[in-house]
Length: 170
Image (tube, rainbow, N blue to C red; front, side):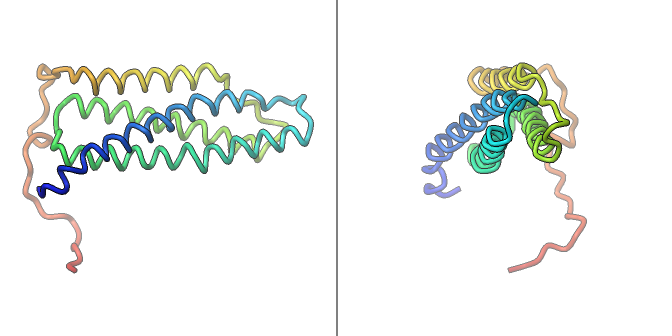
């Protein structure tokens, strides 16, 4: 690995943590915004709330999620951190992605069914996001030793196999 790539690790860390903070913060704010979708809201107020939740989800929260995942993946390879706690963190990030999709589907249903859809109770997704964010922080900061978990050999050793398709050459 070149010195230049190694020197970019602090930049990727800062980008990753910023994007993760925006992503988690947005996933906490969006259910609260969705809870404002009640049948008693007037047409203009409903339009403002729906537009705000849609814009926040598509222009802020989703790009932050993509940046967080890309920067985190890049850091894995730059730091060569193929350790068990990292796989646990990736599983928790997967749960966070499921919550992200659930909130997004609620936003879409509210837009498509204005009077018929009741958003989920905001405490359930917020609790899920807070649990995932806390678990990610604990795993990253504590780096617990999961040596007692026996990983199969195919996860620990490179297989040296060929890809099942032709790789184009440059």
